[in-house]
Length: 471
Ligand code: ACM
Image (cartoon, rainbow, N blue to C red):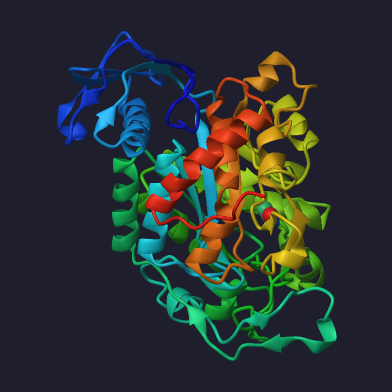
């Protein structure tokens, strides 16, 4: 029997029983027996539903969460008459991620919880929270109150698209901001944990730091020329300076972030860091001599190395966007590849574990249909079919390089997503396709997937998740 209730992602092995009577129950969760089993691999779960009830066993708590999320889909799709099924399942990738930029537009704790619920429904297991950027600093750091008081707010926001009308930019005149207390973040971590999801924080450095520099000008290269939290998008020239005070600040921030988030990973950004200020800064030149550097571009490597040492001291593994590959990189770093497909080859051939987050197929800030009929987006075009049919792992990877690919992640950069509803509209249904690919479901045709996705959409409705309708 084909999947009668549109499981998505499709488990590795699903056998629906046509011969057995369905399990009649009004309280399915009451009848679910749950247990860990040493006979199963850590990532594996087995779910069996018979006319008598349901049982779930798994090799770890994480795999139990995956099994529960599959059970939740079955229950949601079946009402009180639950078809009998045997499922054996395990994910292809350990890292099945969604990134959410809460810096460009702040999202409430409830909005983030809704995203976590939606991720769990799709057996995604990593929420990468982009907490800091030029346009807003969103995490409370003790001892640095201005980070959130000043850096957490911009006076106004650009109206319309950043490009094409540089001379005629208009602003909305409305302050935008907000931040999470450490307690709120710990609450989110626990909320996510209960649903099988790990939150990985990102502190983007040494670029994308304009909000922090606006709060504490001494963190910049030119403290005598104060700046404000950025009101437009794009790449800011204002990057961290190189004084001891800056490195003390980074140690404090990374230490506190390590304590808030128990995940074994911290992301340190590293993308899009212009060198113009370092080239003009006498202090940067002095530092280069002290550090024995010959090229300004090597300064970023010093930041990476410093952050790496602080974080590994806290038992963390450190992730950077793929620009970090351009300077010397500690052996144990992990690389998140966003710019081009062969970056995965570059990173893995140098022995780095890598997460695929490429901007061809996983950037959900791109349009998902004809811009004429869509709300303003950053550009590009990535349809749900593009996500489902993408060739994510480059063919030229050797076997040992393949083994270094940890997983797949979708990105929600929110410059052009001012509301939670808009974020969901951009995320879905592309996130459904991403989840299926990250899970590594048995290969299906686009037509089969589209049919299953259509049947899945009412489930999104039931969860109150907004999505772009299928064409
Ligand atoms: C990025 O999109 N700047 C990682």
